[in-house]
Length: 249
Image (cartoon, rainbow, N blue to C red; front, side):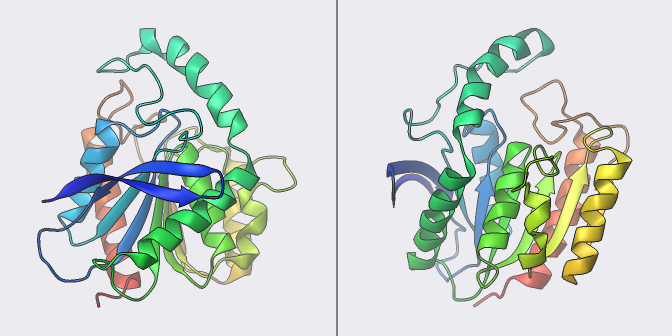
């Protein structure tokens, strides 16, 4: 199926992004897919292609475009335990610089881009995120409740924090259906309870699930955290969520 690199005009300059498009020439629901903290790389491109194969137009932005085009981090082909300290030393300054204000400005641009594409059908979009991307997905959905009908976050980071603007504190603005797929130890029981109570109060459909025998990063086949069984569970939860929430027009 066709894929391409695109340039998206944002308030802070041009953001490069990867797009995967279904083979069929009709219009398709749009999906915004936020990478993990390691950024846009072949692993995320492959996930976008897989999702496009199910009939979705998938946009994967380079979160760190303000620094340079992807790939921004110097990553080994496989991110093993011995490589993680050096990788995190590169990633964390970029993560810390990616403020809420930047996230929201970028989300505006990404959603506008999706809406403007002739291959994307009318109707709401889905937003997916991995690790750091789960928090970005939630921020996008709470900032644009009229546009986002589905949110999925896998092995989330920064979703429930002590900050006044923690993503979970904004869930009262949410209208989308949500699935959160957790690794064992991603969130404390207290944090999971706080997240669930916020979604109960918002009145949205949701599921939070701890995937068995997993560690943080379980969907990423280019890391030691990868679990094939958990990746399949992720597809088993994600695809029905998108199918029932996104109009195929």
